Amino acid sequence: MMCTTVIATIFSITIGLFMFHGGVPQMGTISGSGGGVSVSLLDMIIKVVPENLITPIVNRDMLQVIFVSVLFGVTINMLGETAQLLKDFTETRLTRLGISR
Image (cartoon, rainbow, N blue to C red; front, top):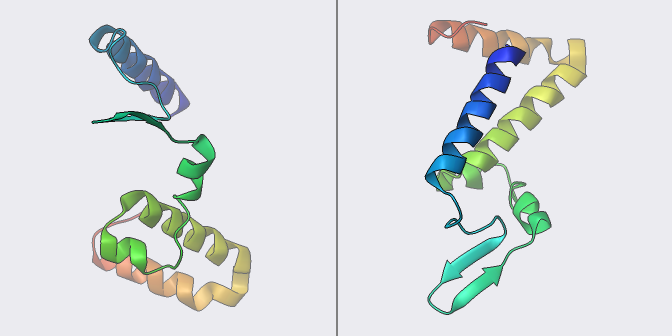
């Protein structure tokens, strides 16, 4: 698994270097009609965390939906036996949808 991830990363970087040599704006800048606007990396990371748990689903903001999903999964696993009923329910729903671990 790790080997395929490394190969895919190297492949993607190589293709990116060949396709976009020199003409791509750097991360943290947004080009508009009136010059570049600087956006800090911290602001980009803060925008990943939603204000509430429903808004990302309604607005279809996939990065925030993934963040909420990972947070939900970690929380359920940290609860252990306390959340066993919720774990069973989730696994049953996934099995009915044809998704298995």
